[in-house]
Structure formats: structure tokens, C-alpha cells
Length: 153
Image (cartoon, rainbow, N blue to C red):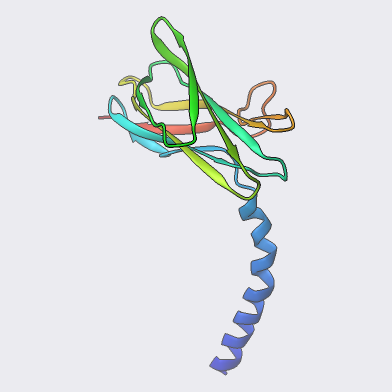
């Protein structure tokens, strides 16, 4: 009886597993970690998958008010540019060719604000065909905001 149950379970898993794989391939541009400490220095990583059959050319992130970017990672093959307002980095845009089926991670270190409970990041991905996908809940965004919860220190 246990052998039949195991065989049935394995057979069901073989049917269900392929059905769930397309969801795995549909990962979106995200930021990690999902939680941090208020007032702390944190290494943030922007994960950018090339989701379609078109090459991704990079990504852009708007830095929330109160977050102070200290350093930006620059591994081989990447370039970036920043926008500043009153000396503070407000936007980082990374440039890199990311082929379909691949992903890249862009990192930076920043100090979290001490007086907030969450950070809402605005993320955009740029594609070789000129398309831009906005990963925010703004007027042009169709995906949920990338949110980092801040734990009081």
C-alpha cells in the first residue's frame, strides 16, 4: 500500500512540476534584502532577470528619501550612472547586456533612515527593443512596489 501511495505521489509530482516551471521563469526585477534595520548600513542587491526573448540592457532604481548611498558595486562588464539632488544619490542606472534566460545582480551599500518603517523602491528594466518595464505601482507601473521593511534599532 505504501509503495502504491509513493508511486502515485511521484507520478502526480511529475505532472504538477512542469506546470509550475513557467512561474519560476517569470521572476521580476526585485531588491534584496526584504527587511533591514532602521539607521543601519545595508548591502542592497537589485536582481534583474531578462524575462522575455529580448535582451535586457540594464536597470534603474530610484533611491527612497532618507537613504544615503555610500558605495556602488562595479563588477567587470558593468557601467553605471547616477543622478544627484543636493549631493545625495537619488537614482542609479546600471548598463549591462543580459541575455534571455540569464539574470544579473547589481549591488550598493547604503545607510537606512532611522525614522522610517519601510522603504519603497521604484525599479525599471530596459530592453534592447526600447521597451521599459516599470516595477512600481505608479501611473506607468503594473507590478507591486519593491518594499523593504525596516526593523527599529
